[in-house]
Length: 301
Ligand code: NAP
Image (tube, rainbow, N blue to C red):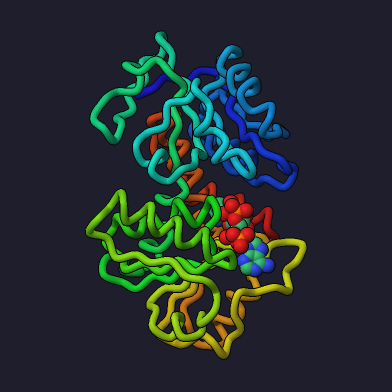
């Protein structure tokens, strides 16, 4: 287990003022009586390397990276991505191991992070999404999952669900991005069931899907009146997972309820991806229920 005494943690991104991560992680540190604190920092992509190295030099325990830094982080030679983050093409969590606090995190490739002596990059978004679905008793293996979007979050989700044995369709406004992502997935997991397409014919794809995931920015605050689909296009056998979590009840989730489908809020993914990062930093079991409670309170429930 990593010993974290009075460590500072943070999230880098731009914009960042809206982030709920400080609230969630500070609640977790307090609950476990760890003298650690977590803060939000506005960092632009061109300053990312300096900011990461500065945080390491100052003895930070770890960082989260959010929009627009997740993909940029893979270009930095000071960061060693774990195999999953490399495959996904994005990093959302950094761990700074050091000699005094022997970091024992097991890497996916069997090594221990200390052996590498570098800042370690992980991606917990996919795991967070998978846990959110499993928590809601949604089957993944063998299910037909339709992911709308092909940006950073869609990349993490599609890798996670394809790897877990789902039959995945990626539909994106810019069709080229969906085709490219599906091609990458197929190259790294040749046995996988995955294809990319544009948004044309989305209604038909939804009729054939078990799970619909919105991984676009549509419906996100402040443009809350937008949705990828209306209630008429949904059906009662469908699970609708909207990874947008602000507002809590997106227009798509309201439509899902109206259609008798099963709605799942993106808040669960937010909490679970944060919990996975917490586990990587501290080696401790994160107080997930408390983290969820704090986030829900902040979102006004
Ligand atoms: P991103 O990389 O910027 O990707 C945005 C995606 O949205 C692209 O596929 C884009 O399509 C699509 N899009 C944007 N405007 C659209 C429109 N008007 N019509 C159709 N598609 C449109 O963003 P991201 O990092 O993947 O994040 C996506 C969303 O997920 C954000 O709302 C973010 O807050 C949320 N998120 C939630 C969690 C969580 O823990 N719950 C974690 C990560 C992200 P094009 O390719 O055509 O531009």
